[in-house]
Image (tube, rainbow, N blue to C red):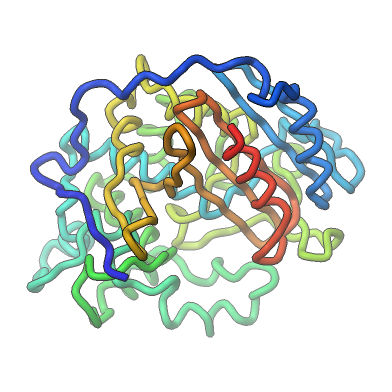
Amino acid sequence: MTPRSAPWPGDPFPVTGELPPRPPTARTHPDGEPVARRLDDAVGLVDAPDVVFALSRDGRRTVRSGGSGPPPSVPRDQLRYEIGSASKTFTGLLFAQLTQTGLLSAGEPAVTCLDPARRTGRDPVTLAHLITHTSGLPALPADFYPRALPNWRTDPYAGYPDRRVVDAFLRRRQPRRPGARWRYSNFGVAVLGHALSAATSTPWDDLLTRQVLWPLQLRGTALRPAGPDTDATGHRKDGSTPTPPLTIGGFRSAGAVRATPHDLLTFLEAHLDPAGHPLAGALRAVRRPVLRRGWGHRHVHTVGWFQHPTGHGPMYFHCGATLGQQAFLGFRPDTGTALAAVCTRRFRSQDAFVATAYALLAAG
C-alpha cells in the first residue's frame, strides 16, 4: 500500500485563499437531543475512574464529567490529562508554523539539522517524511525494548534520553527509500522534534511553548508533570491500580503534552476558525491533505491529523494513550464542532472510550 503524497512545491503547505464557509448549525444535535444529554450518555459508557467529554459547537462549550472513582479534590475538567500520541497534533502545528514563516523547509534532510557535517546520501529522510510517517523508521528504535523492559509497567521511556534517540537515527541504515510506505512511528516524530530544536537552536519545551502554546493562550497545557493537585492520576487496565506520571525521555515531541479539557477545546477551536489567530496560516495548512494511502487511497492524512469523510465534509481526529490515560481529539469544520475526550484508564485496543468519542464526533 504505497502512499501518494501531495506535491510540495516551494512552500510545502500552500495556503491559497480562505477555507470554504460551512453551513450554519443549531445549538442541539441534529436529531434534536440536547448536547449535554449526549455527553452524559458518553461519560456513562466509559468505565474509568475519571472521564471528561468536552464539546464545542459554534464556540459554545458543553463539558460533562464523571467516573467510577471518587471525585478528586480538583474538579475533573480542571485537571491536566496526558494525551499521549495526540501530542503529535501540537508537533504538526509547530512544524507547519516553522515552514510557513520560512524558518525551515519541509524538504530539509533531518540529518542536516542534527549533524550538519554528515553527508545526506542519495535519498535522505526529510522533515516531511518524519511528520507524515513515511520515513521508513519503525515505531520505536530497535534497542529501545531491552532498555525499557525492566520498567515496562512503570516508566519505559525514561531510560531512553534525547541523545540516544538522535544517535539511533544517525546510525540506522535505511532499508528502503523514504516516502515509499506509511508506517506509524513514534521514533520518527521524536527525531523530528530533535531536528526542529537543533535547526532553531531552541530546546523542545521552549520551542513548542513559544511557537504554539503562548500564541494560542494555552495556559492549562504543560510538557512535564506538576503534581496531584494539577495532574490527573492514570490507572492501569484494571481501572484501579494507579500509574505514575509519564516521563517521556527523548520522545517529548511524540507524546509529552498534558492539558486540561478546556485548553484542548481552545486548541481545537483554533483549527475550526483560524481567522484572527497568530498561527492562522499554519492552522489552515494542517487541515489540508498531504498523503493518501491504502486501497483506493481511502486513508487521508494531513500534517498531524487523520481525516475521515462524513456526509457533508471531513472530520479530523487523533487518539493518544499513555500507561494510564487516554485521549481523543477531533473537529468537524462543516458543523463547527470540536470534541476533546479524556479518561484515566488505559483500555485494551478495542475499547468503549475511543469508539464512543469517535461516534459522537461523527454524528455531528
